[in-house]
Length: 66
Image (cartoon, rainbow, N blue to C red; front, side):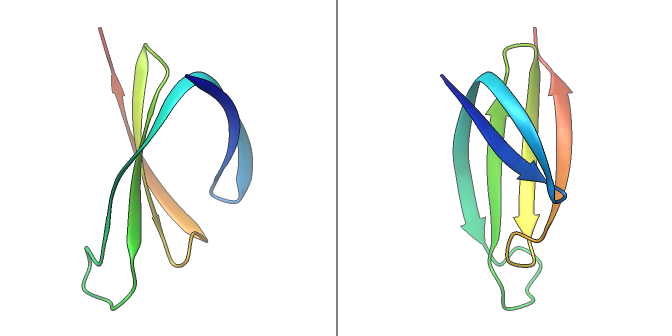
């Protein structure tokens, strides 16, 4: 568990008591550049974030957990 700040769409977001986990890196869209996938787990919400375009852009998918 940690308390940290991450940039999501160029905006800082405070992530308290969360577990941040690096999942994978790869050229998922075959554009010749690496994309990076992370998982943020706050206990009630799990967020997957894919960073691309040299960490300038991101897309996220949120899942509520039990």
